[in-house]
Length: 146
Image (cartoon, rainbow, N blue to C red; front, side):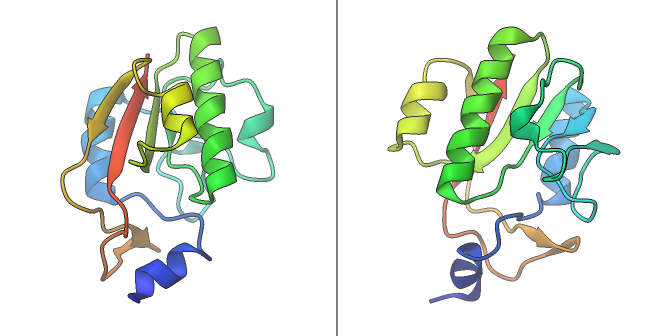
């Protein structure tokens, strides 16, 4: 079993590769990262676990970037929250998530609801700004709620 696969079950806050974030940011001009820590935030405005993005209104946060924790229950909660907030606000919300299209969350909150961009290959997430030596054990997608 590779190191990333073992770590992926323990580590939930995989840092978005900077090159991918920069490319998305050029298009969307993100204002707030809603699933971040001080160490891995991609925006100067961010919401951490103490503030709890799942319990606040996102309408005043501007254009939102979200790479949610990778534990299944947290993925479910963040994707549902992003979908529901997209119905209440005019904010763009962009998610970086595993492309697990067989899950209920994909069918309930993503498919045929908003734009999906599947990423080619497997991402190399970062740890403290340095790309991990192994690629992720899953494909990824960018979901855009307008």
